Amino acid sequence: MTCHIGFVGAGNVAARHARVLSGFPDVRITGVADTDAARAARLARECGATPYDSHTALLRGERLDAVYVCVPPFAHGSIELDVLAAGLSLFVEKPLALDEETALRVAAAARDRRAVTAVGHHWRYMDVVGEARRRLDGRPVRLALGVWLDKVPPVPWWTRRDASGGQVIEQAVHVLDLARLLVGEVAEVSAHESGYPPDQAEGAVGAATGALLRFRDGAAGIIGATCLLGWKHRAGLEVYAEGIALRISEDRLVIDSGRGHEVVTEPGDAKRRVDRAFVDAVLRRGEDVRAPYEDALRTHRLACAVARAAVSGTPVTLDGG
Ligand SMILES: NC(=O)c1ccc[n+]([C@@H]2O[C@H](COP(=O)([O-])OP(=O)(O)OC[C@H]3O[C@@H](n4cnc5c(N)ncnc54)[C@H](O)[C@@H]3O)[C@@H](O)[C@H]2O)c1
Image (cartoon, rainbow, N blue to C red; front, side, top):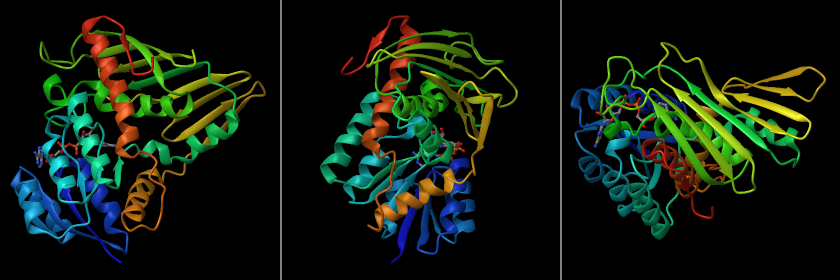
C-alpha cells in the first residue's frame, strides 16, 4: 500500500517533511502547491511531483490520501476545510491558525468527517519526554518554568502580528504543549508583553512576553519568550515535583533528585517519528498520532489566551477554569 501525499506550502518546514517522507518506501509525494510558483516548482522537482499554484488546483489535479499543510499562520482555514471536504487525511504544521475561531471551525469539520489528523507537535515524540513522565512516576508537578529565547526567524511574515500571531502562538506553543502533557490543563493565564523586535514598530509582534499560568489542579506555571537575540539561546521546560527537578529541551533531559545531575540525551528522531506515525495512521497500520487536531486545538487555545492576556493586560480564563 502506498500513501499518496500532497503539500500545501513549499517553504522551510515543508522541505523538512518532504525529505523525511521521501525516505519512506510506502509514501509518494505527487503534488506540491504554493502561491509562490518558484517555490512550488523547486520542491516539486526535488520530490518528483507536479507543482500547483493553489491548493484547489492540487486537490483537483491529484488523487491523494493525505495533505500536509505547511503555510504561515495567516493562511490557515480554507485550505484545511477543502482538504477535509475532499475526504482526505490532514497533517497541519503548528500553529493551527492566527486565531481560535479558524481552528475551531477546522476541528469541527475534522470531527464531522472522522478524519485522520495530526499536528506538528513533534516534541511529543521525543524519548526524553517519555523518560520525564516515567521519572515523575505519578508525582504531581507543582511548578513549570518554560522558555523560548531565540532570534527572529528568517521568514518575511514572522514579525507582523497580523501574519504570525506573535512569538507565543508561533514558537512557545511547543513549550505550552509540553506543559499540558506533563502538568495538565490550564485554568487561567495572565501575561505582559514588552517592546518590538529590532527595526520593528507598531503592528509588529512583541519582543518579549512573560506569562503566569494557573493549572486546573492548582499548579503554577511561568512562561518567558523573547526574539531579541541573534541566536537560539534556549527553548524548553523545567518541571518540579516533590523531590525531583526535570529540565527538558530538544536535545536532552536533565534530572536532579538531590544526588547530582543525571543527563539523558535525546536521540533526535522525533521529527521522523511524527511523520511515520501519521502515515501509519493514514494507512490504518498504527495508532500513534500523539497530537491529533482536536488535542492540538487545546494547546492552540492556550497560546491564544496568553497572547490575548498580554495585549489586553487582563487575565483570561480558559474552558473549565
Ligand atoms: N514544528 C516545527 O518544528 C516547525 C518548524 C518550522 C516551521 N514550522 C511552522 O510551519 C509554518 C511554515 O513555516 P516555514 O518556515 O515553512 O515558512 P515559509 O515562509 O518558509 O513557507 C511557507 C510557504 O507557504 C506559502 N503559502 C502562503 N500562503 C499560501 C497559500 N494560501 N497556499 C499555498 N501556499 C501558501 C508561502 O508562499 C511559503 O512558500 C509556520 O507556521 C511555522 O511555525 C514548524
